[in-house]
Image 1: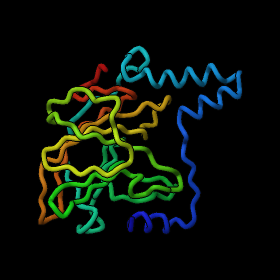
Image 2: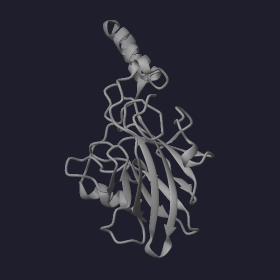
Image 3: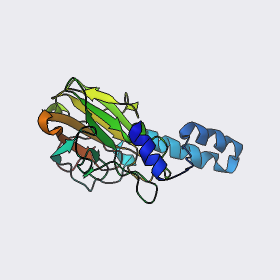
Length: 222
């Protein structure tokens, strides 16, 4: 909450409009008959993309496992990276940029009992001037190496998830920038915690091909 206040106050008074999603799109389409077929077709397209490769563009980005260190949002130097942008696969220090956008998807913090709190961007900055992408998290009972495909449902959006070392989390990332709104999917695991440094070693794999859910290394086929 403190970080949220600092970030928002730094920008002064702001206005924020949340997209209402497919249900409103469908209702509005009914009010404009000429648009109804196109609008509903687009909605159906997005729903179908997760399981039918015929609706997806050919994959062009290879899946790669990456290992990196992030520092606790609290108790570590304010210049150290405490977040990660999974849509760009880059370490970040959480902030609101000059264009009003945020620069991260998930921030990390250490809890008093030695676990890791994963904080999606909207938890820390619910009202950034240019909006923020939704991030869905889902705890997995399968080990990181054993997950070959992301689930397409069951994610809890924009809510903190606390995990222990070795626990794997699935991510659904709406900030992909894909033409039809298809998300990116990822898997993340905390490999270790160096408490004296307030540092966490994280391993992740992100499928940055629109709508693809394959979570193994190489060029995905689904």
